[in-house]
Length: 122
View 1 (cartoon, helix red, strand yellow):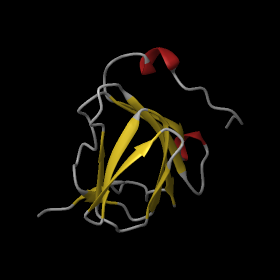
View 2 (view 1 turned 90 degrees about the vertical axis):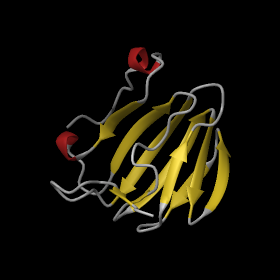
View 3 (view 1 turned 180 degrees about the vertical axis):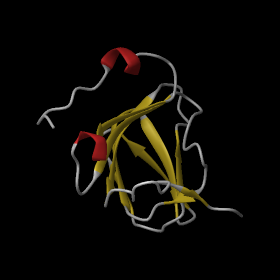
């Protein structure tokens, strides 16, 4: 395990949805998972409304991420930390005209073999 992680800038420059794991079990993590996530305009959480067993933090780097948490909607601009407690139904999306970029931090790590997100059925 190295002590630094490099974001794949070339892939980030594409116009597609992107999740790049910066830290997870495969790279030596024991307590959390860190990913960089890019939403092109109109893209968002693949499972729409879902929950996680652990806490999720979203730190918005560029653009605006819209998050619905516990039935309330928030527009989080660059420099905003979104806190999603374990078990809280939520979804995230990009309603803007420019791509958004954020760090997603999950703690604790999802269990081996278990899905990290569980869809919430209406």
